[in-house]
Length: 415
Figure 1 (cartoon, rainbow, N blue to C red):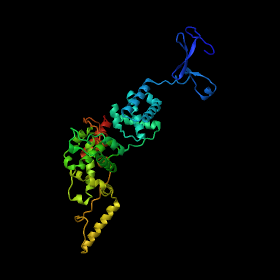
Figure 2 (cartoon, rainbow, N blue to C red):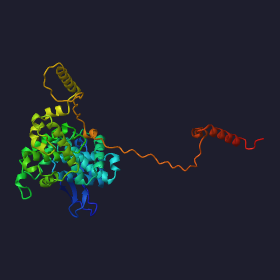
Figure 3 (cartoon, rainbow, N blue to C red):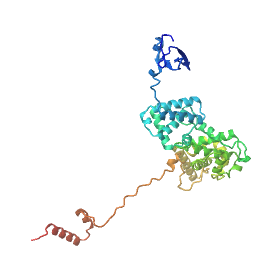
Figure 4 (spheres, rainbow, N blue to C red):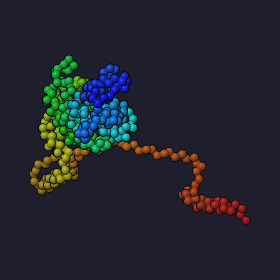
């Protein structure tokens, strides 16, 4: 050994350098004792001056990671692998988890919140990379409560000062509908129910955009809306064979779960389509209902921007112009002129104003239950004040009797 030295165990001077991985160690060749551990350099100045710093004196040993944080980091990596995310996503999610864990409020939180924190870091990473992943999917994988998850998600975004874009519905439609089992024939899917994937995705995307333009998506979970839109798109491509199929059976054929609000979203979409159908001249004479309007979804989507503007977004200026037109037509009829009325209205009736395009929560607001007033218990023994008793006196005789009783009370022993 250069520079001398002996083994602290056996006293032998036969010490050799043994390279263990990237660290060089000094080992006694007689007894095998490790005399010196690997040496590290901490800064460039140490390297320049050839100063060797042992690992025990470096900062590596002082960086202790708690067992809870180690478990959380493993859960982040496992969740990324289950979702088959790229390795860059995994590194970003791990970094977010480590940053969040540095805050005392997160370290002192309950285990349920720390488990939710794993999903929040993964969801934030996916949103930033425009990866179609919903909050409901994460909650299902983690068996987490949706309210706790959403609260923790907003807290982490604010705590770390992150810029998280909103979810892209178009990418979510493609990802969600691609999992349907309706694109190739199988024993569980009859041939009449098999549909071309690209055609169904294109029409579903148009229906979801229609729902977004008519306030059916704002503030709501997107999967029920996409499920209802996919069902209508699938029916409209071959209505003769599929109108008798229900939404529940469609989800069973597609091998997906039926979200609870999906039937309500379906009825709202059908109501919008009916309002749009009223603006097409060749559909007004057919008297469509919510079932037959499915056959004409292709025509409605082709002219959807114009139909939405006519059905919902016609402003007061258009209504006033229409009223002036009807008023001028009525004056012309009074002077003996012959004209064509745009609509036949009874005497004194005004044309109906177009319905406003409002969110469903404003069209059908939830009923507020007013608390019942507390029940008052009257026993009949309550005291009546002098000012209040005057309201119960009806005749002059009652007034005199009351005054006499008051005087007797004031002078119990008259002279």
